[in-house]
Length: 438
Image 1 (cartoon, rainbow, N blue to C red):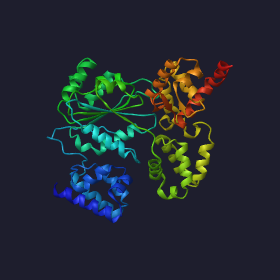
Image 2: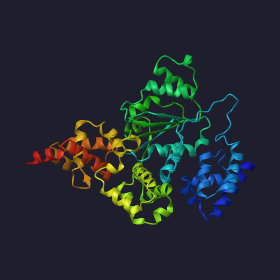
Image 3: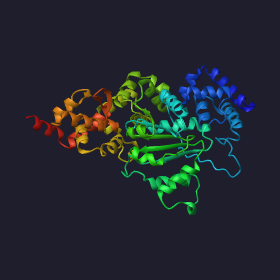
Image 4: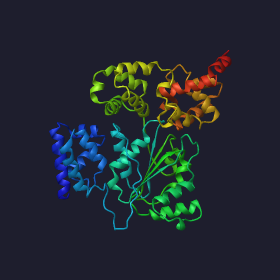
């Protein structure tokens, strides 16, 4: 631990105690892990990320000169605020492609700890972790947030590639395009590029051999798309995000699965508080509970509501909760001008990948009166055999449109159920079902 490191750690600890916060409370307010705060205070983090310093200053309530002194202490430790260790050699280039973290990241302490634990394992292979979950669950946000926390652990850089597996374009990134993205990030000149995608990927694996590199492959369609893009070095770590469960990667690459579910109620409250302020939430706790319920704890839905609420500071939260419940279907969470802020559009990118049997069962799930789906009930509704119904339900679970509850039983959250019902109405599924049961 150097002198500057100790100085910043001491300052952070003193500010935290002056604010009357525990390390856990400070970590939650700043959207960091308690481990990150502890390492900073003890001087074990050599290169704290500037965004983390800014988050800590905000969480501590530092302003004006006090905030400037706090940031200056961190910059002395960072070495003129570079945000990562100086390159090894004057001509060295270290790619740092991870996007900026989301402005308000809350909760997910267990998942962040699991990522650190999984990626810390060493077994002689390039270690892969697959973050999976439904649309809007915050998979990319989690990967990006964690990547910023651990940037110092990857001195050779971080690569980020959007594989476009699910989205408005409908066309996933090809291996050739991904290979070129890799080599562009590593500044390989065009006249040095091999002719084929396979050869380019081989060159990539050669260039990153023995390097401590983090690679985020975001929004993968399936395991087949990811597999050729993996490095061969045991010093590399790969995070893959996908709506698909990527079971094939678990089988062939021993990928560690990490399923992202909806936010717990306390975490959802933290997210809303980060956007709207603790005071506004405290004024009407019951309305906050209603909003969280209407959003099914889904981070994207909560952010959509928070953004609209920020634009209406004149409205009390109970009025917003009532309006949210009164809107039909998903209309309250739809923005036709921006697909990235549209729950209906996000769900549609998963739905349109289904085969005809799975798509029909998904629609019928919107009409199913029970809270759980199981093969025999679905078979009775559709005329399928239980075996075919079971395979179709498994296909829905594979792309995170339903969630396994127990053996042969599945559940669907209220937002997905609303979308399924919309699709059932569009396809006149209720009339077809009534005719089939007459």
